[in-house]
Every structure is written in C-alpha cells, then in structure tokens.
Length: 282
Image 1 (cartoon, rainbow, N blue to C red):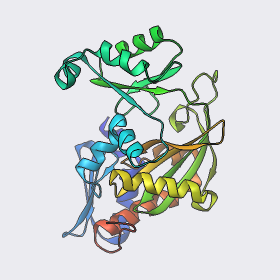
Image 2 (image 1 turned 90 degrees about the vertical axis):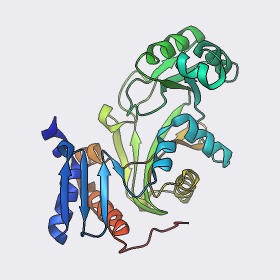
Image 3 (image 1 turned 30 degrees about the vertical axis):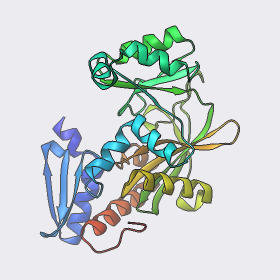
Image 4 (image 1 turned 135 degrees about the vertical axis):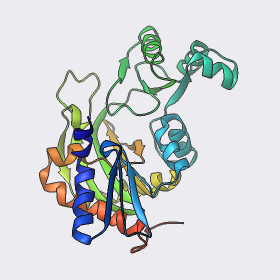
C-alpha cells in the first residue's frame, strides 16, 4: 500500500520539481503526505488536497449538500443535492428520522433520482432509483457505512468537462464521454472507463470558464477542479466542485497531458512560495 501511494503521479511530479529546483522534498505517511519548500515556505499536499485552500473551504467543497446550497444561493446553475443524515445525526440536527427526511426530499424531487454518499465517491456507490421504494432502499444501504447521503434529480447528461483552476487561471481543462454501459446512469469518471474527447484550455468556451470561475469563488477556494455538465437540452450546470487536484487517471489516459499537469503543480508551488500572485484572490 505504501509503495502504491509513493508511486502516485503527484508524488513523482513534486519530486521532479523539487530536484530540478533544488528544493526540500519530504514524503511521509507512505506517500500520502508530501511537502516541497525552500526552508521558509512550502506547499503541502495531503492526499490530493493542496495547502493553498483553507480547511473551511475544502470541507465545504467536500460536502455535496452544503456546496450545492452555497452555489445555488449565489445564483449559479447547479444540480441540487438534498441531504439525508443517519438517524442518530438527523435526530440531533432537527429531531426527525432519516425516513422522515427522505419523505420530505421526495416531496420536492420526484424519481428517477440518483442516491450517493454526501462526501467522496469517485463514481463509486452511486445508485439510480426509478421509484420511491428503490430510492429508500439505496438510502438505507448507504446509510450503513456512510453518515449522510444525498438525493439528486436524474439529469440526462450528454457531456461533461473539468476545469482545473489556480485562482482564476485555468491550468487544465478536458472534456469526457461516458464509459460504455447500459446508459441508465452514464459514468464520466476516467477510472471507470470514461474517455477524453478534447483537452486544452483553448478548447473550452468562455461560458464554461466563467461558470467554473464563479463556482470556485463561491466556495472560497484557491485551487479547484470543477465538473460542468451539459444536459440533453444544451443547458450547462455545475455538477461538482473538487477542492483537490487529482491527475492520476488523466495522465494514464492521456500521457500528452503529463507536462501540463506537472506545470500546474509547479505553478501552485510558486504561489505557496510567494513567487507568483494568485489571480483573482480577494
């Protein structure tokens, strides 16, 4: 496990940058914690979280229900995520049971719906439910290992793109086609077989860049990876905002993107070292 963690692209990329620039490079926790710096300042990466983000902003982005509520309050088009907590937490928050919260959610969001953990996933544990019985079964199944889940309306997604931002500056952008399957719930995760259809910042639209930038600012992030979807009516909305950068599957699926991914980390390092400003900060 430690060997696999040390073999991650982010660990290798930061090691290359440190060696080339004569910087300190510490790798701890089997490769899950990396620090690069000059002895005075440093960039630290925990998993895929960069130390340029505040803890509050990172936590807000990680919580799907909270993040979508924040984005909606700032008038951004977003796929809503209705929160349901495990009984012990739901009762503490508002005195209801998880079932009561679920019934309330379904009074506003009609099946078919998507049920998933409120945090994380990477395409895992995502369920499509076409009726209330199936939706409740999915909620119950996930509330065993998970403290909270979200219910989202099923959107007919035809395309998805990711904008990777350092401040307001796009450092990477790529569009994806879904993994082959039965079409009931298209998966745009590269780890699950999605494919890259285009890449390069110049390939993106001004609309996409503007929406990604507004989403980053809404959540108060310094670095972000924003997933935008286009539905079958041509509408573009925010699907998810990630507070970390993970290029692991990107550089495997598209080796030509590796230099740009290394450059992105180097740019983030320069911000951390005070050698370049963060565009759009404040």
